[in-house]
Amino acid sequence: MKQILAILLSALLLAACVGAAAEATVWTADAQGNNGRVYVTVQIEDGAVKAVDVDTNYETGGLGDVAAQKVAEEIVAGQTLLVDAVAGATFSSKAVLAAVETAIAEAGLDPEAFKVPADASAYNQTRDPIETDVIVVGGGLAGLVAANRAAEDGARVVLVEKSGVLGGAARYAMGWISGAGFRIQQGLGVEDSPELFYSDIVGFAGSEEEINVDLAKYYAEASGPAIDWMQDNGVEFKDELNVGIYDPMSVYRVAWGLNNGFSLSSGMEKKLNENVEAGMVQVLTFHKATELILEDGAVVGVKAFDSRNNEQDIFGRSTILAAGGYGASRERLESIFDNIGCGYITTALGEGCDLAEQAGAGFHHLDYNPITGGVLPNDGFYSNIRMNVKYNGVIYVNLDGDRVFDEIGSNYKARSDAWIHAPANTLWGILAEPMLNPETPVLNAGNSWFTTADTDWAIWNSLVEEGELIVKADTLEELAEKIGAANLPDTVNAYNGYAAAGKDEQFGRADNLIAFEEGPFYAIKTIPYAGRSAGGPLTNGKLEVLTEAGEVIPGLYAAGETVGFAVISGEASVSGMYLGMAATYGIGAADSAASYAIG
Image (tube, rainbow, N blue to C red; front, side, top):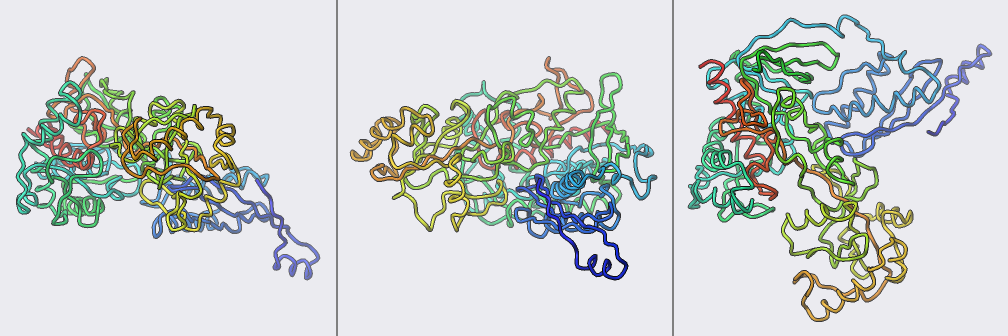
């Protein structure tokens, strides 16, 4: 922490007038925001916070940056750290609060003195219970779909969302959603069927033994009608289809939101507002569900706390867990990987799994998770510098200096497996100076949703100078010694032979075979980052949550990523299935939950 002493002009003028002056100190601090570090400069005078300036270069424009400034203003106005996070920008808000608290402590003041609410009656209260038919935990796409569908089925619904914004990851996603036999597909003359889709699903997974057959068949049959239902309820789609960017479909069956994923979430949110106005749905934002209320083994409600620690019990015969996955849960991911970064929406902490566990649910695939390789470990779990993983001429080697896959032609799973199975989940990207193109940066900064290219090469140059994450050497032998990869020279020599022959004898790489002939040479240290989660509670074809023994837990259902995508694709990554599971399983869970609750 660096202290900067500054004597304000106004204080000097006051001293000249009355012979005394109050010294003001300025402190800097930072904390993790949504896309990167948030830096604050805090002016403290006479034990009070006089000003807070915030640098939010990495935060979402028009949302995170505005929220950060609003929180800063409220801290100064109220002389309190008990400021509510701004809706839709929870992490940006909390980052400002955490950084200011650090600055206050470094200034020698007690941060607890700034945690006194202006209105004590607004905190730590027990609210009157709410009674309803169906409770939906989570306000992402699956939760929005489930709430709307349950209301359509005639059930009264309470939707509980821990943040201040609805839509979840779908708001920032590409908006791809898969199905078979939906109207857009038919209108474009694409011949498809649930049977063909199911055949593709089994092919992606490898065999029926790798999937939940009931859920996979349900998805193949119900995903097309789910897209039609969303369209009927206000979601706008482009009049085009694709086969996806992961493992491709056999036919064009991946639809695309008109304005990417935001069209899906905003369309469902508009429909939700209609159901709120009709008295069918109540929405509780800034309420975190912490506990399932159980009675004789059945789930009969949810206990939640708002941002001011007020307790709210909600009672309903059915509860749908639609709280997303655990792609941002450091605890869960670091139990699987030696080195892993977070590339997902930072609210995906696995609460759906946590709540299901309270009810005695069994689980699948919690020991596996898909990843994307290529993040530089600049900030541990929250590392936010990405490498262009298919950069011109690049090869990847493990810690011994051996290549491990076809860097250009491998499918998504093969690339993912390369980092998953690498010692310490670490691969070095190797480049030579002639491969670098000033117009094509090697690095990007940001997360999976908001990424900025290092167009001026400032990040690259800084990391090369530091010499830890990007190591530079004049010869391959010197580079091998610096990174401790003894086999690197032999590996590159063999690869140069493949390049000269035009054929990669080791991994079959056919494209972009460029020899490493002239230095200097670079090694870029990369680890994987998680973008979604594979595991979740066991469920049946009705989306009822099951125990390890396969018994139904009465009143408990799951939808969306909480279910875990591996139930229908094993360890494969399939375009359009993630949002597809939100829609399809959201509808299925709602139908089952509403039927159980109201008959």
